[in-house]
View 1 (tube, one colour):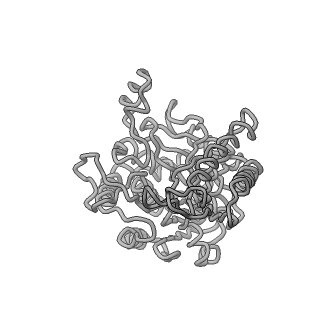
View 2 (spheres, one colour):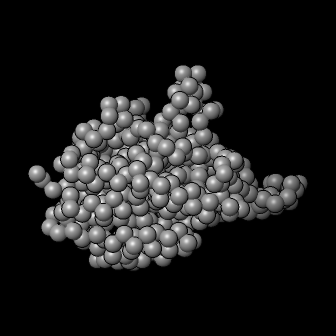
View 3 (cartoon, helix red, strand yellow):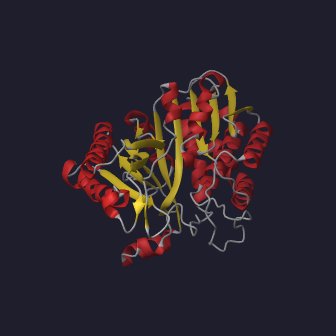
Length: 411
């Protein structure tokens, strides 16, 4: 298998010229969720040229299928949307779109999977089976994977035997990080509306003040993690926004809270949601609220929970192919993704790994000084700028090695 992988990767250096150009082009021309039309067109054009059969799903989603005889079917996924962030990197290939930037690194994901698809297409003599390259829109709003599923994804392509994805992170470039089990948290956003009774600011006795009610709820919610979650269990509950009123001398009739929770355990997730509803309703009752509160759930991300067997298989392949020190064990990340909906729709196991993208010397210097938080921009920062190499070439190789660990012909 190793000889087969090496044979497919013989064209890597030549292909990296195209990959780098594509990466810079996608970075210059970012498109936000569900508006990735130019991006999708370029992806589809490249896949067709390479030999993949291409279908468009979910509006701006693209999926390419390369059938190459009998064998396993492997699906590799990349997300393609950008963020409404104004870039501040100063790169010579910085975003040319006002207020939009690939601040999460999805341009890396697109370019590396396109590069891997090209190498696999050019190296068909070395493997047998089917490779599916899936480019998913709207990850940033937790809508893209479901949109592709709703548009017939599971009928449009063969059922994969394993599904893979990677994400560039603020980790040292030249490294890959894998882990079995939960790697990204589940995420839920909740809009809570509580109701009061409006009045003149000088006549509070005639009101039920939703501002005071909302403040009481915010404080009480902090006890869910500190007093209702067992020590050692992971949970985050954030109140990201509290909005009420328009004028200093008017007591409004309602207030809105925007909440976000992150968990690794489904039972704990359900408990936290139930506790939020219990506390909000209790505080509303205590305040004499004239109306039941309203709960709106949105931007819900499933848990990304790597299959142990698939992850062990891929990790072994990585460790065999890459030099010592490249592959490490990933810590669980508190970020969230909608990727897992795709393999779950097929009932297929999956593995999702992390790709380092920060200059290794700068990262280790900041680590030694204890200034990682201050010196190293994270994903979604206007300063987030993965170094091109070795990030891109390692990302291409990771996709190729993972796919061929199932598809390579046996000698």
